[in-house]
Image 1 (cartoon, rainbow, N blue to C red):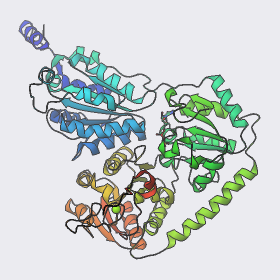
Image 2 (tube, rainbow, N blue to C red):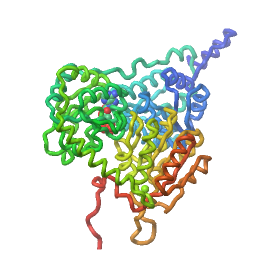
Image 3 (cartoon, helix red, strand yellow):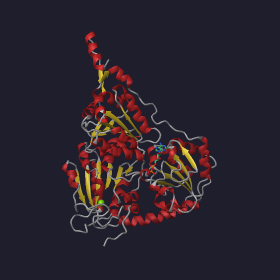
Image 4 (tube, rainbow, N blue to C red):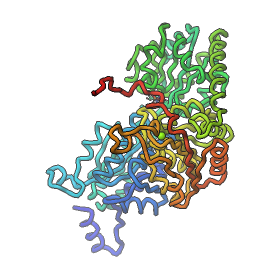
Length: 579
Ligand code: ADP
Ligand code: MG
């Protein structure tokens, strides 16, 4: 007997009407039961009512202008909170737009759930041409950690529970949850519906390293003459801040933060080797990787960057398959970072000797030279500004406001800001991550502002900003404390390219002297146009004090950037000259 038939029977038999629920309510109840309090998305068929009803039920629903940005907001919410960020999209094209963010979240190990409405299975599977027809589950599967579809209202509780657990347990990642349109209006008995919901217990269980793996790692570590700890964004994600700090300070081992691990310990910490990066990578003999993969961002653990000195790696990661992915790992420590570091802290309580003074002195000497060189460049008050003089101003802003969140993307804008702007607190630097992808800017900024309530400073290349720029309307609509600074050098890398035939603009240039600040004004926010470091500093301070949505158009010398920023070597260039 169907649920609808049941209710008719019951009402006919008795005065008391049976209480009903439906797919819409069950999805919302399942999310709420699991403390999911925010949804990022773009409304439309078939999930318009789901968003409305979720809002009415007290969930914060943040509507974007494009799904990719909503997805990026959800992904960064996952990184910041260790709860899966939820993104809600319409079928086919909306789903595909969100999928880019889901794939990026998975690559970065951020927990996220993309919930997408979809067309009817019967029509999709026979390829009969439904509205926005697409086999979304099949398309999502290879691009995320797990993918599920729910066909019956009674299974919504299980579907949501599986999605949450898959997103946050083990190595976190993106999960796709496919909800066909028909599911939402399926009706069932309210009590049975409530009973079908699942509260996920211990969604990301602690994973303790085996004692023998800990002993092995400690033996390798104790044999080191020039040890180095590399902190990755997994370490930032783990929220084991105190344990990590204690491990570094007690052991006296210098540390190098990957970009999103900056601030886990302050960049001006005496043991930070950030300003001596090339030296420590080359000269270290034992390297402890804490939630950092030996991927392209670390030159795969080999080659020139790592020098000729023999090296042993100790790797801490929750994902066993990560071990030996690029080079041999002498001591794999598989477990969650909090538990592993706790075990190491226990292990160095006795018989630990701090690294030799020569190693620390060599690092400090290199740091002093590099920091001195940098300081010179930052002070230059050139007109128009170059990247360094503009970044000098922003470095000061973050120093004075260490709890602000810095979002950063671009080519030169990214590479140089990463080195110049010191971070002082964990999880305050959000950037392009593992793929080095453009387009995360406004999504991350909105997600960070919504999740933390802290002021956000988004430092954007003019090109990078373009991928998510329309979301300044979203920032204004929700009145978020976001200050966007655009490093406007008239183009991608530089603003000086030309079309040799003279027909069109060069392929990497934009309209010269654009006024991005006017975009913010169009939606009621504050727009400022600046040309000097002093003006820039003043404008950012004002924005951060007021908390008003602000966009600062910072004019940068179009000739200042270099091709592909710091990763020019990855950009193939033709050597064949056509006559
Ligand atoms: P980065 O780019 O900063 O070097 P990566 O994204 O390459 O960082 O590496 C992050 C690593 O952290 C991933 O291999 C992931 O499996 C791991 N990780 C994430 N969360 C945890 C955790 N709680 N415990 C242990 N490892 C984790
Ligand atoms: Mg540019």
